Length: 268
Ligand code: ADE
Image (cartoon, rainbow, N blue to C red; front, top):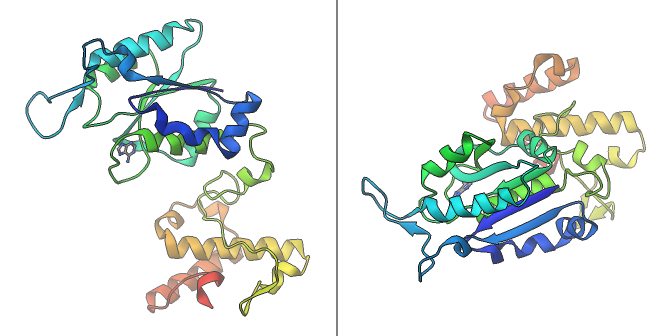
């Protein structure tokens, strides 16, 4: 997969040389190209921002440098067309589903902005010819889109074939499609079996795969009820078995009575 990132802080992306993503780049699975937006600003100060029309605080990124930068990056490979991703707190939520969609694209182009954002005519111009997504990584405001791009590249990059050491890791993720879709992953443990008086739940040492799977699902349901109850109401009823339903009504009753509905990891 090819990823282009145009930013006034290309140095922000040094972490993409590390760990899984760094290795994927070395292997050629990921081809990440960084561009300095100011290279397309032609006044002496290499200005990329100006005051907003209509007044108000802050500065807006000028359309000219963005247009010139995007044209050059697009024209360098006229046979292909990237999906453009504009990080902004006003965008659609970035979810695992969107990460999977992006992981299936051959080429992504990220345009992280500073200041109050990019002049909207840039999105209108390219949106008429290409797929342009305005995407938010959460309901909070960052100082710029660079960190949002790091988040998205990591979430997408780890889904590419061969990037995770164990392909099942992505299958078992919280939010991954399948039986555990929309359930948070439950607690995990490793050796030793006892640490500071806390024992690993015996079931995990039993070697009984069926019971372990059931226990994990119960813990996932408990954790979701505690941390993200709104996800439970989005679960399709046909995805719940008898045991799931019994556990959920027990948790709902406890919650109604004012008892905490936490999982194994927090209850003891
Ligand atoms: N830029 C500033 N805040 C952001 C957010 N929450 N998501 C994406 N880009 C942003």
